Image (cartoon, rainbow, N blue to C red; front, side):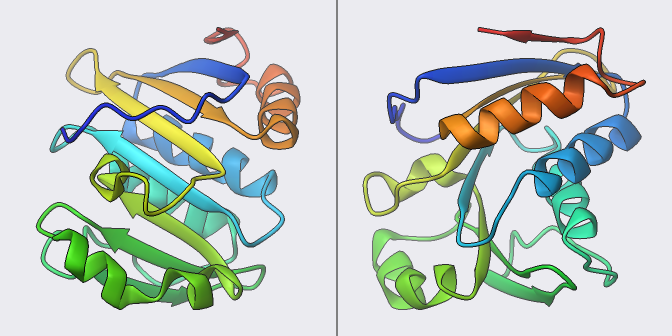
Length: 171
């Protein structure tokens, strides 16, 4: 992973998922707490589930097109019923590439999901930062930190969720 970054968010939630389906489902819950104009950083090793989580957020935003890993494409766009999704993958990107994207214009039109967000350094300030750790073949531990309104919404929705309610804690 890139540099250790911290945005000093006051609230964090730790969630354990046991399958790709649950990780995608968590993404759907995250989408339900978004209002538009958010930047989401996803941080994790190759194969940790960043694209799976992105797919869940996209589905929850009303995107019905297949979401693919964008490791070879810097920016993919998906039109959703609720939001336009901009899927950015910084795995192979330089800081110069980031400056060329024009994030200011994108965030005014939708949600920006940034895989390998830690590589953005201080060029962007996320609304949510999600760190994904592999804890088993399909198991993932996700630490979600972000703006209070988003974390409060997530905590309330996860608490009521039949699949995840017993696998989260506030940290």
